[in-house]
Image 1 (spheres, rainbow, N blue to C red):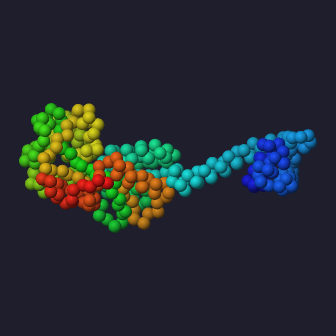
Image 2: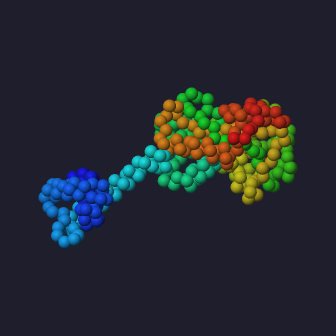
Length: 324
């Protein structure tokens, strides 16, 4: 007995007629009758009560019919699931992300993606850049999303969007009353910074150092959220991803303060192990992430692999931004 036999039996039971079932199955009536007799012989029991205008199931036929419904339904479900996997509409992705990517950028992309393909399961873990890269090499993660350059040939790096680091202060801080500040104004001001090794901190330190501004560290805290809370409490000023402070600035608990003639930007990248096999669902997500970044996030600079510190309208490490 196989699924072909069950399909014939199921159709005959549904139609209660060999002739009607044969027409539905595009088979000859003798072929259907022969298959039914072979099935009854294999099982050792009659499956239909013959006589009258319609066939009726025997007790054995009713048992087999229930089993046939279940098995044929399972077959259809399996075929549909395999098709969805092949087409990239169903599957599982495991992401790793740095603080900015994992908490502020990736959730936006995932929310939009799942609005179109809700059957995809997407899991993600937030960690340091080194932790994420290590897990990518171990093939524990499918992809990662992180800010800043990744100069390692073991990885495939795809730019998704630009990320500007912005100066923030509590509304009660003296600097918040200014429409715009200069780099000179920042000299000597206490800064709240992320922990040592943070890509955000490295970029802030490098950008200010190259601009001749001494960085006075009043406090270092783990992660962007810690920096924001300390700044909100009036303990100092800070520079964080603009994506991370949108809600606080709208709520009025933090103030974004433009710095005249100075911008710090970096690229948020989708990262995977080089030579990695991408499943159909992973390929679909990669394409969608690039589209979403171009349409809904900050445009990429011309040379996205290098963070830029732009001063006085002249680029430091990279040319100006272009429209993605």
